[in-house]
Image 1: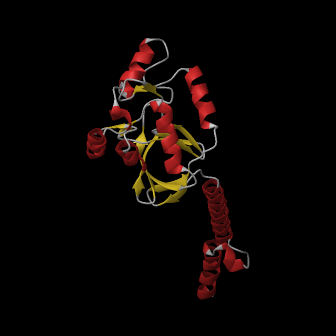
Image 2 (image 1 turned 30 degrees about the vertical axis):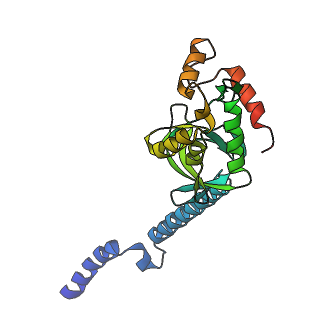
Image 3 (image 1 turned 45 degrees about the vertical axis):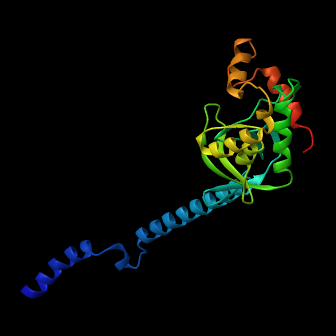
Length: 224
């Protein structure tokens, strides 16, 4: 009798300690966990689809650190557009598209338009590989661009249609000795020309007026 009484006293305690699934009911915890995992999978799949669509519509094809694409517009001898992205070639400074220079005999020639035309020739129907180096103060992408093995900026300097920083100093010396392009006569450096135009009310140095930007835009619409 005493043993049976003890067993009866233990039964309620065991019943209270038994988990819900021991009575034939499902444990709700695994279901909640499954729901969380499924939710995360749906979210990750959605993010993957969004990322794919963004990359598919991106202006460039990303290939490691390089950006590749075809030039759709040339602003001047050192600035190009690829799929709406404006790229400024670092290490060079080409004459502005409406800048004029002096020939060897003292005449005037449109060195700015000549530089833009040469840039068109170098990039027409060619896929460029551009290595980004940051942005300038006007939020233009700074990138060294090549067409195959040809460095576009270096070629502009070698042809005498752009001045150079230390990066292309050798190419500039070569153009000087051969008296190519700008070096055939006297000219204002592009930086000096912009400064002089800014002092004359054309706009901030290095940042053309709206009218000049409009004319440059019209120039860029011409077929390559």
